Length: 232
Ligand SMILES: C[S@@+](CC[C@H](N)C(=O)[O-])C[C@H]1O[C@@H](n2cnc3c(N)ncnc32)[C@H](O)[C@@H]1O
Image (cartoon, rainbow, N blue to C red; front, side):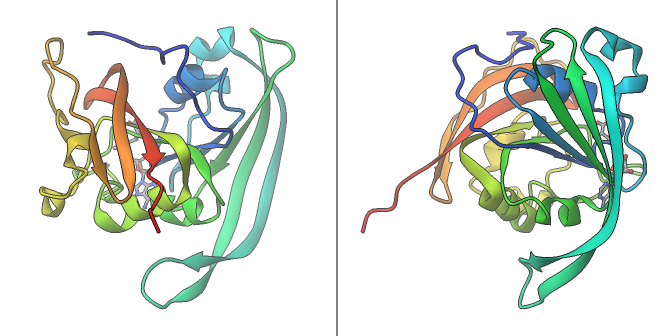
């Protein structure tokens, strides 16, 4: 199965997309979700290559405005009893007019910051997008599918929000965690005949693999995460 777009009837809650350790990989999430998401947050400690300089993006966007924010904010840290930490805000905010639909503006925010510190600043997200990362030289080594950061992602993810990932950089210490289906085919290069990974339930949520949107460090799957109501 080779699908590169999302199912038309897929519900996506209203909220931003967040992609940590994104490097230059901004065009795919933008083009995939342009018609469903109006705020995209990309975080990388080095540079982010926003698509205004990517010739492929010319069919999608007309750049309109840019502003730079520099200050600091205090955010609550989920680790131990640290409490609040001061996070430098160094972000470039661009507003794009989408060429296909003259009505629609898309806000693209680039946080030049550690991925976790960037996510701590967002009250909620509708989509968590993460692919193409590793523990090798040049990779972040940040365990977004490991216990601590994955819990943070779920805490921020709205009900029926999406996880879009190729399962890259999963933590080998987490080989048996209940969400291991997220990296069923991580690092598989021969991907044409692969069956979709199985749905699963954990952490009071139902994870349903609803689509596959291309290949990266293995197939990139889209999971919809539905909260399960707790019974009294
Ligand atoms: C292997 S590259 C992957 C880039 C992108 N995901 C892709 O597929 O093209 C890893 C990226 O993580 C960034 N990085 C490293 N440590 C980071 C951190 N703690 N927080 C955010 N970004 C980080 C690097 O600057 C680099 O751009």
